[in-house]
Length: 532
Image 1 (cartoon, one colour):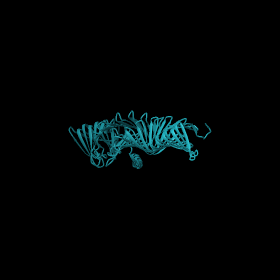
Image 2: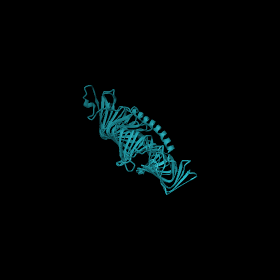
Image 3: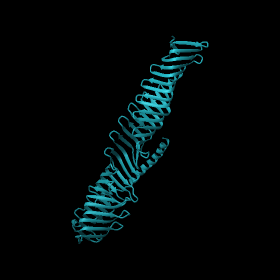
Image 4: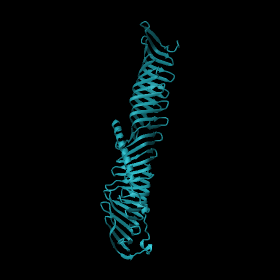
């Protein structure tokens, strides 16, 4: 047989027929043809010399060193041919099935059409049209596709499969479905060797057990399939039941149910409450979120916002949907525009109508200072201040000038606020001692002791009236330059105006920044939802 390059060789046929002046050849029975390194096996071949085209039927098998294709029919000229009828391609670890396959020898390209299924290792790909470049060892497919890999199903409009690199790149209307969540995206890179999924553009991730109002949005993401680790990069926002958690970088270990987030911003739209922090750790097992790097709480009210700034902030979620907030080393807090303070420890339980301040808490209200062992702050239903309760070592100080201070100490002290958030009355109970200046211009003080004392303040926050009952003792004492300091101050007196926190104007800048990012996010989410 002639082995010259470019010549079709007939290796075997049970019967060979020709007619029309040798223009048509018919090979019947166990047909075996060879062209270069390619072999064709089938039951029957009809070759048209003038058309330079052959038609093969029955148990067709096309083989080369690396490839094997099985079909029922084959039509072509060894440069460009078509296989049809339950076509199956085998190549190394690849299996490809389709109704029709077009094979171009010169370009080393294959096109699979209708009911196309590609198997590679643990991957199963279904599409309608697929192109395979044997030189580059790449697969391209368009017009909708579905990939099955383990527990994942991935739908897309277009994709590239790089076999040597063992990766897939998907584009346009991507939908990744797992047992627990669904991801919507426009681009996706799947690295099989690393078992990693990369999202280089924005995605929406939705838990299957929630409605579409609960989801995660991010600009970039990496999923480690085997380790079950998620990384959300550049910008991430978590939407859940009216609460929004935003950050720059989010790490989540699905196996351990814990992770961390950087530059965190939490918004509760229902309660108009914000949490801001440079870093946060969360644990779903314990239901805790620990914020570090200057965490802040901002509670917007109809009057003045409540603000808290600390070193560490811990939020714990309870089984009954309740929660607690604890802050450690509170640098500053504002209960309204005028009342501010600091303490070592802050605690709030959602089931309570008060906030607790522990560890040397100090409150300032313009020229007034309140301190004690524990301070409780109660709110009305509209979130305005109702009262402040100081337990143990309660001490009230009012600055008259740089040298004169009204001072009251007792076991328990309660300050009542009017509806405009102004302190208008203070009541002290138990072991009361006080030093009051009836008039700052007069050189006289009133030393008073009793069991119950009430102070009434005017609109300028100064003492307007004092009322005392039960064992009241009052003494007017003249003072002069030589008067001992022990006469002018109670033993536990201190004035720490220098530690008074600065104004909170900077917090509005952070809220504005996140609100601006939120508007951009909403536009992109609407576009993605429209195309999903």
